Image (cartoon, rainbow, N blue to C red):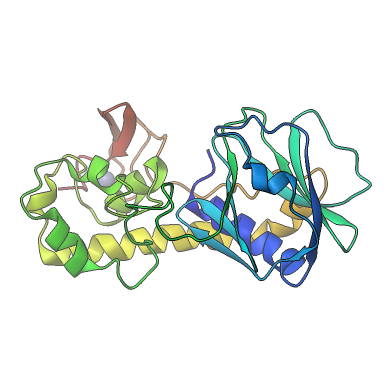
Length: 269
Ligand SMILES: [Zn+2]
């Protein structure tokens, strides 16, 4: 599933190809995605793209009259291609540009979304989202205040979009290991110093992923390219039983809800 770093990598990849270009129209070959493709997008034509932004895992194309909101779902990806490249079976949407290129949306499981909104205010999919993890608003004071009286384990707490967006399963395990915090700890038990370490490590893990994604941008943009997924060197995720890279003891795994959590019982307290 595309996580925040992959979506940000995609945003950075498409931005220089879209901003300042004009959308001629959209070719919507299959509009039955997670939600039906917005009716307004079928009639969109001759519209400049002002900016390419991101909120949580939504890509936001700013137009003079509103916003195209794209979500990659479970298996979606986007590429910039010459319009002449024939679409494949799972290429459901093309954004056709005035420069002879298309932004092509591929999604085998069709769990993504292409929506239209005149304004981002009060938009249901964006309402109630917590701060961006890379913003200044996400810091030790914020985490400590929000954790007060919360008995929930810190791992699933971090994955709640209402607390902070974009900390998926991999990044929650990895940042807790980096902060040496046990994933079963109650949120309310974190000291302000631990919140500081945790906030910093979450930012660092995400920034490393984005930086590594950046190195694959060239591949990502090629016509046969996979989306900007990248093999970050994972410290704990998926490594149950393998030696901890810090202490050498075997790593452990547990479950929070339906999600697997990986950690080191010697290094994380
Ligand atoms: Zn260890």
